[in-house]
Length: 317
Image (spheres, rainbow, N blue to C red):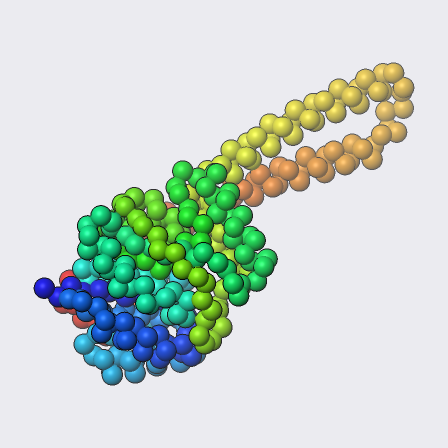
């Protein structure tokens, strides 16, 4: 029996790399035993010719290539979700188009899943060669602290690139929240997961769409989605600031009674007020961030809007 593997590939301005990606995956497909591949490319509102390139691939390989095109850029998380929704394979892989996720690992990943010992075969980088040092440092700190403040496990170096069984895919799709962080969701749903290690690979063409601050914002989403510790921290800061302010008030009253001239220390009082006010605003910002995410969830907006696709309703059922 031939098993189908759905390859979900989010694309944002990837016109330069897509032909290389397709050729590489085709060479791997021919090495798979008793399995075939279905490609699901998601054009996430690209500004270049990404969609045109995908359409050419679909015209060239009508049997295997499917595409979904968003009405605008909804983000990689929405693209992942859309791809998983439309995947029809017995197994589903998610991977980037830039070939930093080694396609040559697919046969081994499939072999491990077929043992029935695992529901997911993930990948993790053992090195970060070629990556900016500052980004590598913050990435390591992110995983370190996330594992301290969250009950969900975050594997250092883990990539989104993984191959999953159908039952795990259904579990991931059942988590329909708008504010998504896939690495956390993959871990949160459970199931047995094994991580294949590999050395970091650089892009074969094009440029990454991820900026440093984009990654910082993405990390903040992870913290908010999988930990309530910042809220506890805000409460602690509030209690601590109130306690310190009481001590300073006692100090000022005693100093006034002993030395008189209560206005002599007004600069220190202004400094104290500014410090406490700053802490209050900081804590209010933390609460506001959580409240904002909750507000977005209550709107029940769709994760993405589909502009066009070559996938029929029959293929999606």
